Length: 136
Image 1 (cartoon, rainbow, N blue to C red):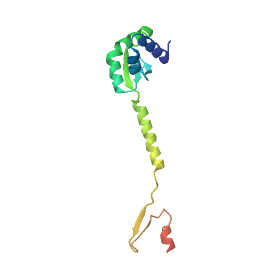
Image 2: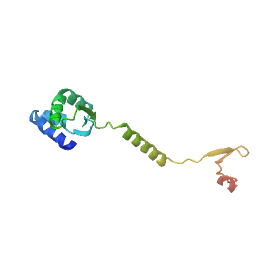
Image 3: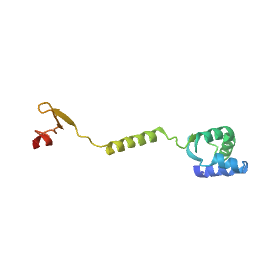
Image 4: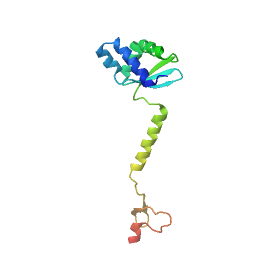
């Protein structure tokens, strides 16, 4: 069975024969098959304009070529390559939040001593006075 890279290279080769050099370079630049699952092919494109153009102008010829090479394919969908599956996006967001938490400055907590009206560091458990109050 042909893998997704070989399948897409075959599509590109056949499409290039029937498309002008400029059109081919414009619409098929940075395209690839991202996945093949249960008769569905997901094609990655560089931007939404390419996505719209390929799905309207070239979809039938792409589908015909692919079906000639793999009869199990039933549908083709296009996705802008910056669009990632939700699991990946969520995982990256959690990673960023953790990095922010790690890189965030730790701020000391302060409270006002009502007797002296002075600000001092909040005591840690087990301490009688804060460092500033011990010095006085």
